Each structure stands twice: as structure tokens, then as C-alpha cells.
Image (tube, rainbow, N blue to C red; front, side, top):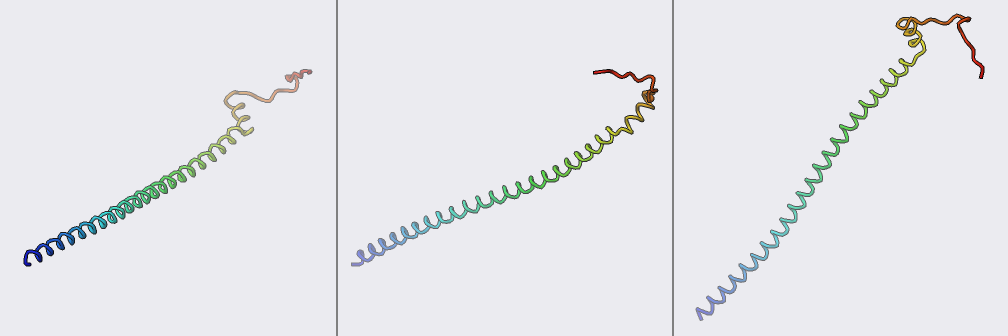
Length: 108
């Protein structure tokens, strides 16, 4: 009878150990799932932050390029002004307005 009780206790202990192993396995799967989810969330968050940073840099670059384009447009208009061209023609090229008798009209 004593051996029967020992065998029953031994069988119960084995079943308890197996149940604990099964529970531990389930908990390990749940833990692995949550760790994977945490890793994916962190990856997405880092990607989101980096994208926001790149967008901010590109907006700054766009503002800088717009200001540069505006300054180029002003410079272009300044270079095309008739007063400037007339001044250069008189001073550097030594040109002057032609006399009426110097003008030749052509027929078409």
C-alpha cells in the first residue's frame, strides 16, 4: 500500500511538473509576442521621428531656396533695367545717342 501511495504521489508530481511546463511555455509565447510587438512599435516610432526630422530639414531647405530664387529674380530685373544698360553703354562702351542724320531707315 505504501508503494501505491508513492507511485500515486510520483504520478501527481509528474503531472504537476508537466502542467507547469505547459503554463511556462504558454507564458513564454505570450512574452515573445509582446516583445515582438514592442520591438515593432519602437521601430515604427523611430521611423516616424526620423521622417519628421527629414521633413523639417526639407522645409528649411525649401525656404532657403525660395529666398534665393527671389533674390535671383530681383537681380535679373536689376540687370535688365534700361537705365543700367544705358549707363553701361555710355560709360564702358563709349556709346551715345545717334544724331538724326546718322539714323538709316529701311523699307520692308
